[in-house]
Length: 54
Image 1 (cartoon, rainbow, N blue to C red):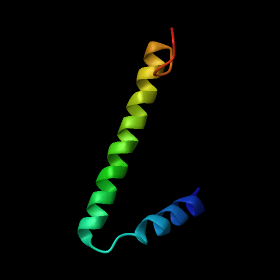
Image 2: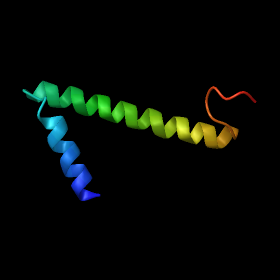
Image 3: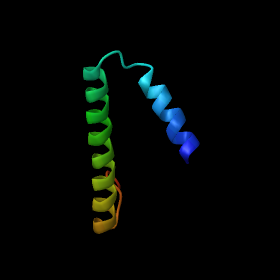
Image 4: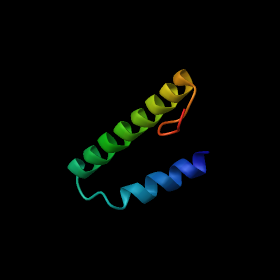
């Protein structure tokens, strides 16, 4: 798992040229992570995936 994280960090860092780039990257990653977690919890609570016909 650590190898994947290190690779991901290196891959993402290569596009960052300033502190603002890092800030925007982290903000976007945090937003997307929270959205994925919330969608998963909602699907679990409702008992079906988003856009599935019930």
